[in-house]
Image 1 (cartoon, rainbow, N blue to C red):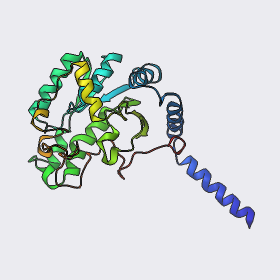
Image 2 (cartoon, rainbow, N blue to C red; image 1 turned 135 degrees about the vertical axis):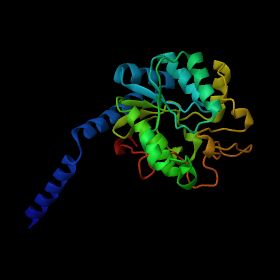
Image 3 (cartoon, one colour; image 1 turned 90 degrees about the vertical axis):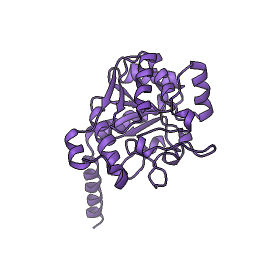
Image 4 (cartoon, one colour; image 1 turned 180 degrees about the vertical axis):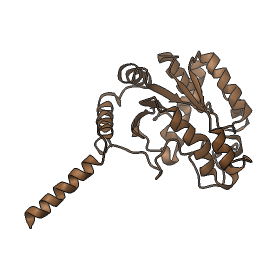
Length: 264
């Protein structure tokens, strides 16, 4: 009986192991190695090591061209101006954001900015009148942001984002190097706060988003972004008066970031 139980347990472990692809297992091992070797580097050294040594030609930045984007993009440009920059053009952005995008691209000399746009056919089927954001903002974000981004990042093994723990909410515990969606994701500014960001804008002489002076501190699509009062949390103007706090592009379906237990 004992032998039968042990065989059953062994069989179960084998099935659990083989249910995961070789690629998943290798990516998890890669994540553990990268955390061990690079997690303590400063932001520029981290970007240089990952984009040049670990993922040459396979790295991309996700940029919203919001109130803090210029700092990350300037850091990336200092390492390699040809690094692909993915901007999700939802069709709902402020005109000021699009103008700011063009200004930063020119100012920083970025040479490979890619606009990820939603499928025209899907928009016609699911949001013909453009008001899905009112009735189901999660579905709107999935249609206009999540799906286009998933398609845009297909060629890349490393994704660079500007997320920070100081943003709070689901971002409060992000790691500098994460495993997400079968890829490595790096957040080089994870431990930066708003004061550090402000200081870098001054030191680097970077232009501000034109809406920031009007009280917009975190900027997404126009219908779902409001200015915030002094002292309010930075992202409180996103999806105001709703439980929603994230568009979904940075989180698993259950709202969490996947972590390796060995690296947690």
